[in-house]
Image (cartoon, rainbow, N blue to C red; front, side):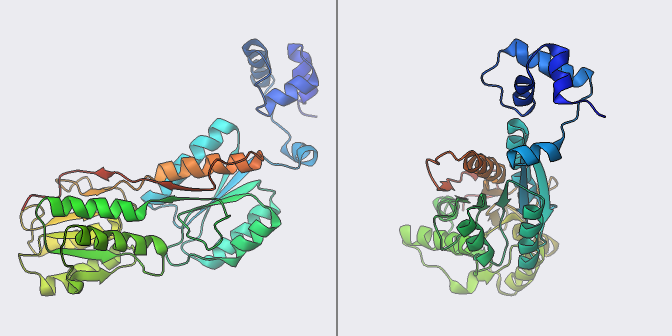
Length: 338
């Protein structure tokens, strides 16, 4: 038979209840000396918690699930980093699932996580779908979950989002304030509200500056590198030197677009300025200057969502059910004065 909590308690001269509470992270009522004794005993006796037994007693697993679109993507990787930081600090295990953009996989993972007793789930965004009836069913059942960057009609569902409108408005104004009057824009998928908000920020920045948008320079993208390449090829057919700047709704499209222009001999910060909406792959180290972009704050999204979920698990009242994070501009010098 393995080492039990009773063995830990006996080894360091505390009650089984005290040993149990400290092992389970409930340490506020105990002195540092008592906590240290129990932790030392755990190491010396090589104690491994019996999670199955604890689950039967507490009806919890101290496990949180995270569902992302693409675990290899820099944006989602930073979300996962933020989530794991808080789960580690608060004594929760983390299960990670990647849907590859499939709504069915997202729904399947809900069933898998619930069957494994996961205490709550954080959902990071899909690129093409906002609503999901599975969220409504989860909400109605009282199961704890938080969504990231999902604009659901049920505003009672706990969520954290970026201020996509404000971020793109500010980035566009940075171009305009540096003298740019004719800008191209690459949207994200317009089925997604965050994409529509970014496009609206672009539009409103022009209106605020009494400038007119050339609709022929607005290109539909889907947040992928490949769509940036496709737009770049289309853009070259109509490029004239008076088009001084291009804004992409995310970094993946920005890099794809840039590589097409680079191959065509168009030089960044000489012939054209390029900036992006953040998210996606990590900045290319070979580009100089690196692209100015909206700070997508993906790690902060993960941190915030996890804190909110843990509050739900502890049945604490949230100060705010839907948090919107303001976005800063990371000025890396890719927008030149004209």
